[in-house]
Length: 340
Image (cartoon, rainbow, N blue to C red; front, side, top):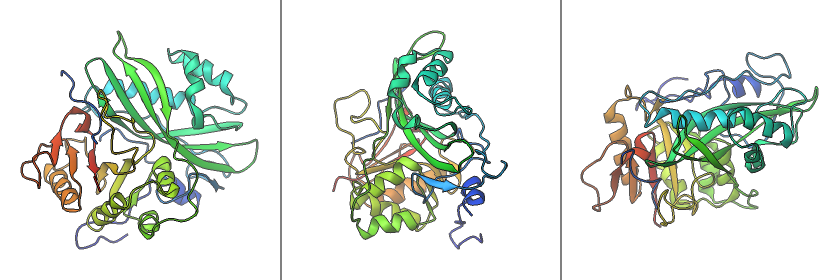
């Protein structure tokens, strides 16, 4: 797709679905590349959380798409913590024909060195299906402390019954971990729970869902469909999408209820915030991403009405003293929060 005057190009959609469907370690969690998915894995931008996919690029007609293990960036804050969380989600959310069900998921969890009982917390990762494939799109910190962490694992998932059609979906899982040797220990799973679609939506929601410059993973897409995302956040997305292509990781569900490590409510569950992990196709965590791009985006977010903009760069200025912030949790994404 040709570029626009601002250098923005049409999203690549990461191939499959277009082909298929035609301190210390820092402060707490997200307030009031990096690692990435395979280029052959599907993007879930602007599609419903569940749809029928007759074919997939790189796969036989009707087959589940090929996926690859997710890898963190060397620039991540403690990459192995993210990898630990992502590998568990990959193990739980994918299985060969006949491998469905919680009992077999428990066995896969045990093989990862975590209690099999955690499979009982996997929720939407374990749909009733004969076989499944899963691609981790991104793993983001919801919080990272010296002894505990929250990793938000954003994933696409495809399921199939027998020789039937492939169904595309996915979710985001807040994976909780505690420090241990030789590897961090997974202690809990909190999958996204966006709720059902609303009967009516504001115009801004429809515009966000239709905007090709805004990439929404399945849980975030469902958040917008639920009607529980505040208009201020939707307007912020649209304003930023006028200049940038933005890959959103988390909006409302799949994020810690409180700012990680505190008892302060996060703006995310209130539908007043969203996180961006990639700008114009460049991962925030990637050292090769121009700092000027990230700084410009953070300032544009403030201009779009965000009172609370967090990222890997501590910016000066702002309408208020605390409008901009930076910590290790936000080393891999930009947080854009709204108070009205």
